[in-house]
Length: 336
Image (cartoon, rainbow, N blue to C red):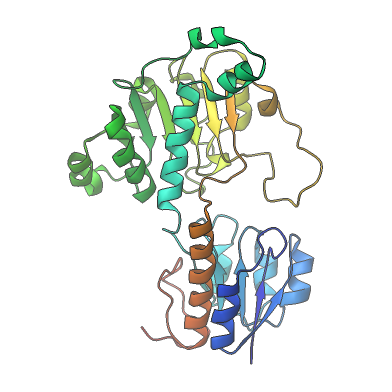
C-alpha cells in the first residue's frame, strides 16, 4: 500500500473526497498539521506522496523524502515549495491553478465596491444611528473610473469581464503584451506599461504569482506613482507589495486606501490564537479579509479533490493534469 501524508489537516480539514480518492488508489493517508520542517520530516520521510495546502516545503524537507513521487499543492500558488529542489530530486509537483477563478474575481470586485461605497464606515454609522453618513465625501460614482490590473492572466481576465458592466475603464499590464493583445481587445481592456497604469488608475488590483521577479514589485517608488486617492487591492500574494512602504504611504495620506486579502507580515495560515498586531489593522482607510478570496464551499472541495486525484494519477504511473515542473525527470516513469 502506498503512503501519502496530508499536511495542514487541522487548519484545512481533510474532505471525504480526499479519503475516497486515496482509498480507490490503494493509499494509506496520514494526517498532520506540519507547520515546521522537523514535524513534516518525522511524518513524511518514507512517504510516496505529500499533499500540502499552506505549509512551507524547503529543500531540507524535500531532500528528506527519498521515496516521494509527487508533491500535490491543493491550490494554485507554489511559492512556498522549493520547486528547484523537487525537480532535481525527480519529484513531480502538481497544483490546481484554476480552482477559484470565479471566487477570486468576485472577491476582488467585492473589495472594490465595499471601499468605493464605504461599506465598513456605513455599517458603523448605522450602529451608532448616524444618518448623516449618507453625505460621506469619499463616496464617488464608480462608472467612468479606471481599474488597473497588474497582471493579465486568467484571474485578471475574470475580474475585467466582471468590471466592465459596472462602467469601469479597465487597464492591464503584462510582461507579454503580444501574447494577450487579442484577448485584451476582445474583452475591452487597454494594455499599458506598469508605471503608466499606476498613475492612471483609481483602483489597482494585483493578479500575479509571487516569485523573485514579482517580490516587492510595488515598492515605494511605484506606490508613489499612484493617485493620492487611489485604492490598492491585493488578492494575490502579500509580498508582491512592499508592506512597510504601503503602510507609510497610507499613514502619510499619499494613497487613498487599500483593500487586502493577503499580507507580507501577518501569518493568516497560523492556527487560531492571539489576534495579530499590525498597523494595517488600525487604519480606517483599509479593508482586510483573512485570505479568503479563493474560498467557497465549491472551490475548497475542488482544490482538495483535484489535488488528491493528481496523487492517485502519479501513483498509478500517469502524469497529473497540471504540472508545475514539466521539465522534471520523475523518479519512476510516467505515461500520458
